[in-house]
Image (cartoon, rainbow, N blue to C red; front, top):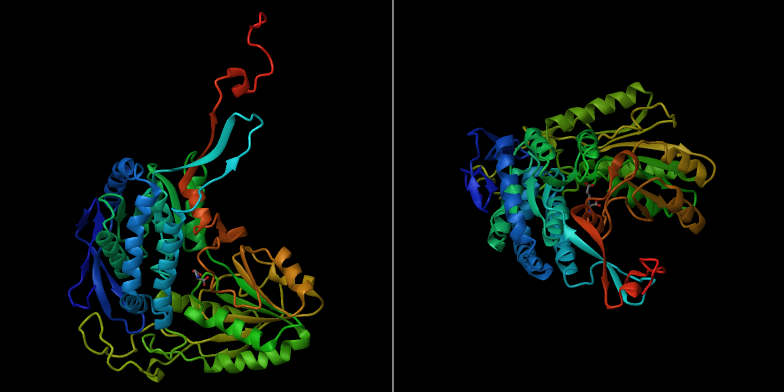
Length: 525
Ligand code: UN1
């Protein structure tokens, strides 16, 4: 990787960097400044078809390697990621706008996942199952499914791809990956790392581009499994398309309208910290970010005062500056969506408590004077063309018909909802959403905590923690509209492998081995 001016990224297909079928390119943009970071060839369905050809062909050889041999290749990728964490972390920040410690954390999460997937290769794999017959050995044998298509989002442009890629490859599948169109440079560097690590030709293919390329992956019946993390709209489309096709697998992870419940027995310092982290980290652009804070009436006033106070002060600024808490949102469509939902909250009767939504770029401190930009190697022009917003916080009486507390915004748009009664009253509000990804409860009362654990309708739940920050070895995925399967960790193994229930007879006695209780013919033996 370098910061040179002329960057034109290519696809990586069948062991070659290629411009693809079409000369058309698209640009990657720095959301903080609006600068162009580079041009990338735009993949077409024809490019995807070539990539799937290559992956299908490479599969036969790749599957023949032992687990451990395949894992060795991934360990080399692990070292690339570790050695280049700072450098790649900076590209993450430049391309998707999250502040620099999060940029680096994205890369760290990626190598954690590689560590998990490659480490599995030296662990027992599968189950030994007892048989009714002593001479039989039965066990579960896993086989790779074939070609795995990965479609990944911009908000974790390195980590999430590795949730998919690392496991798919170690298990013996070959891959066609489409990175998000907002973060192609991250995709390019990951591909370079794969090449440097010696992944054989055709085993790993990248096609850069937009939804038409993603659709081509989904529509190609030779793609045996599709792993998708992204918007609910796109994800459900993929689920519907593949659902009706026997033999094709899918694991989907989509959004949420995640809630944090703060009970009357909450430690208030913990509650405030968890809420601020969950609502504003990554500028509210994690699938697990919280947009609903459901707070018991006994502690509501204190919570509101302290949360509002911090929301007013959250440091929005240059994402390359270590002291920034919140960077820009990724692009103009996110800015517009944020403003649209803030207006909607007002129309629906919300009482606005913090309104830093229209952030003036002139007021953003630039703490990173010597920042080298990808475009020209000099300090950027400034932030006036960036996609800047600040926290927007409101309180609203709970009403099942309000759209602002039911629809995902993906920004620092936060509702405070007061509840009365017991934990079941909080749960009734909390569970009133079509989504079910992540949740947290803040309480010192173990009964409340356990009730929440058992009744919160989510795939990831936390007590006395933010609802962001899942570790890679946990299955990451939601229930209800938030997902199907969990496209990370053990669940990816399920999605990219087929099981055979395998039984071996160790006896030469046919009857014993088959467990026959009767002779085959009436004469007997
Ligand atoms: C996402 O929210 O889009 O749990 C992924 C977390 C991260 C992954 C988030 N490990 O916050």
